[in-house]
Image 1: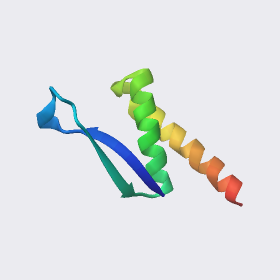
Image 2: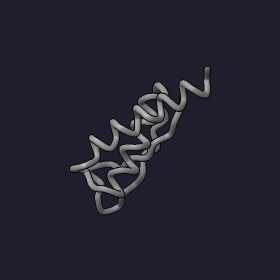
Image 3: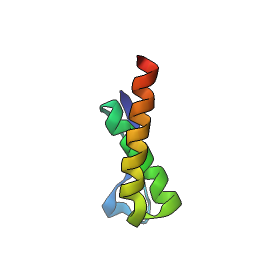
Length: 68
């Protein structure tokens, strides 16, 4: 799966120039990255890991069910 992600240069905080990174990753990692971003914004970083692991397991099971 090819995804594009945007990050910002750490040393350029004043200007916040986005850097777009395109990379190949597995479906599991792409789902993990997406859910991590979403849960961080909604629930905060402290609860992020537990929520993320639960949602990834659910999404992988749904994805495998659709393929079969």
